[in-house]
Length: 345
Image (cartoon, rainbow, N blue to C red):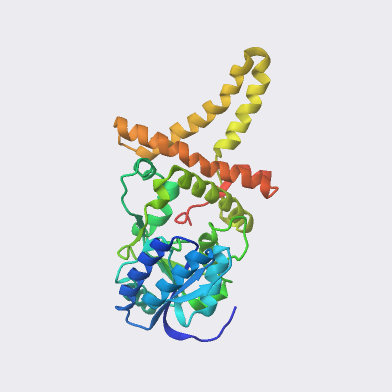
């Protein structure tokens, strides 16, 4: 990547595909924030939508003063392209289905300008907006979907942060090689990869708990969407484990356990018939039940019990993604490993 000196200011890079209404709302929020920026700022929207949505994005970019860039399919490659075309020395990453607060430029620019050179980035928390959808009501318990977004609210530093609310020094971004342009999944894991590379290079990502980005609730309104996201995250985690082995940890994958239960069930078929295969759903149910208990903590209400069990059952899609990826990557040892959390280092 280039080592050219860039002007002082902040460039925002937003990858998008479809999501025209959400992207328009994000552009409006970014326009309001740019109007309060203490330094020059710009927004780059990197898009690979179909022609109709692309035309709408271009019109919205013109209206809100953003630069429209046609990009590749992979989200990491989109963000790299946006940075390559950016003017300024600070880069803010956020997503098309989010809305930033008016003070985001002020706060993130001040944090990075005031910090020493060992601080490579600043992250703020992201909260999913409230919804009355049934799926949202029980998936709000999911740590797999929400903890990484919210972590900067309760930490001083993190190993990595989601690119819904992350500003970095361009020099550091280029030094560590930016985002992966290819990976096992089109989206998912690229933010983790960047953060780990910055951490391993000796840079700190500090947290600003007061600069809160709002995430659209559509991602948790639909059971199908939630399952797809969790499955993708599980697959991407295994890919991350292969390229960052020093950040792995032992884990109990529910589907690895279920496979072992199936093997035992097959052995018991001659004695118990088909009932021996009930060991598989029983194993998954036991894992979901144990995880649900951890999710609800001290809340002993019947509603909390029902919601957390439903949530933990859907969260098993993350395990399924990891289980499948271990075979896709031809690394069966990954059936017993996962990535350490962003606040575990």
